[in-house]
Image 1 (cartoon, rainbow, N blue to C red):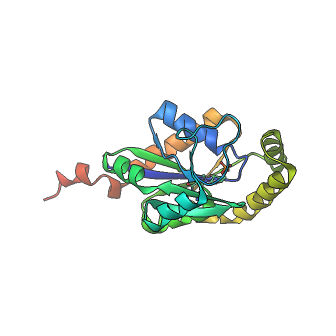
Image 2 (cartoon, rainbow, N blue to C red):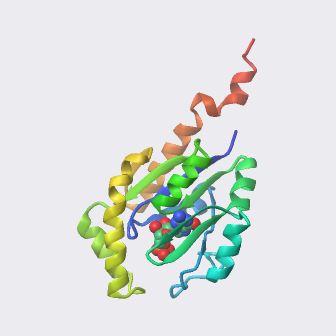
Length: 198
Ligand code: 5GP
């Protein structure tokens, strides 16, 4: 079977990171690790959570076309290294990117076959609670992220699916079911169909 590119977006505090890590650990998806100029949070590791780079190194990667997409988000740059994604797709893997909306729309332009999933927390108050609970950020950053979250919501209509993340395990199952169904669309089953073609 051919590989598939799966994009997960959603506001900070939607629980994307946790869901994507479970898709990797429990469902065998290849999780792309992004590059960022943001400082690591307590407990984050270079090469596991992100590749933490200087703005100069980020600019070099961008210039040399090493990034599949990139975006500025609340004062920091983020981007997806191209090589890993292309390699894994060509090996038939399901590759999952956890990226914000500007990046997701850039990927859709380059890979129209990508499946875009928007993940939402169940309520606005839950979103506020999850953002505030993350004690690693100051009040100004939390406010900026909440504002950005509300700006992203209207862009849901650009996505193929909306998944509400009330219970992480359920959200993971729903995304896996979406991907299983998407893989059975006839245009993705060319090998299976070819043998019957006269
Ligand atoms: P955080 O700083 O909370 O880890 O991430 C901030 C936002 O950047 C989140 O919405 C996250 O999904 C997004 N993000 C993470 N990596 C990438 C990336 O490689 N490209 C883009 N466009 N967004 C990313």
